Length: 256
Ligand code: PEP
Image 1 (spheres, protein in one colour):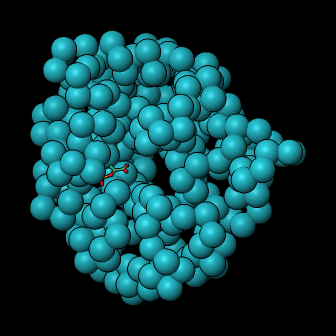
Image 2 (cartoon, rainbow, N blue to C red):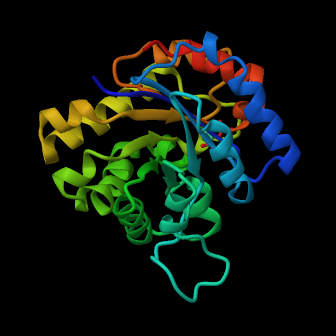
C-alpha cells in the first residue's frame, strides 16, 4: 500500500515566531487528523527554522520535516549552499527537489536536479521530485511529451532501488500560486500517465508503490475531490499550508 502524503511547502514565508506558531497550530490538532504509517504529513519550513521545527515534531507520530532544496554537491567551498548531509544531521526526512520556482528562477536543469536527488538518497532522505508543464505547453497539448522528457532526463537515470525511495509531485506550473487548479480529471490523467511511464521503465510493482502528489493551488475546498482519484496520493501544498485551519482541512480530506 503506498503512502498518502500531505506536504506543506512554506516557500520564503514566515518569521521565526510565525513558523513555530504554525507548527504548533497544526500539531495541536494531531488527534483529529487520523494520521498513520500510511497517511503522513510533511512540513517544509525555510532553512533557518528547520532544526527547531524538527525538534518540535520529534515526538509527533507521522509528522516529518522537509527541506525546500539542497545543494547538488556533498560539501566544500559553495558559499551559501546547504548540503543533504547537513539536513540529515538535523533529522530532516524529505527534500523537495526540482520545484518549478527553482527551475525557473535559479536555472536548475534536469542534470542538476538528478544530482540533488542522488545527494538526498545518499543521506537516506526522501526526495520529493517535482515535475510539470508551463501554460504554453498545456495549451499546445504537448504536456505528456514535456513531462516524459523531465522523467527521462532525471528519475529514469535512477536504479530500481533508488527510484523506490522517491516521491513524485506533479505540479502544472500554470496552477502554482495562481488559484487555478487542475481539475481532478486533468490531474488524474497525468498521474496515471506518470505511473504508466514508471511501469514501463521499472515494472508494475515499483510503479504501484510510488506516491505521486498533486500540487497547484490545492486548498481546503478542492482537496477532497482531487484526492478522490486513483492515482493522486496526496498534495504538495504551497499557499494553503501557511494557514493551519486550511492545511488541517486538507490533511483531513486525504483518506488513508
Ligand atoms: C507549490 O509551491 O508547490 C504549490 C503547489 O503552491 P500553491 O499551492 O500555492 O499553488
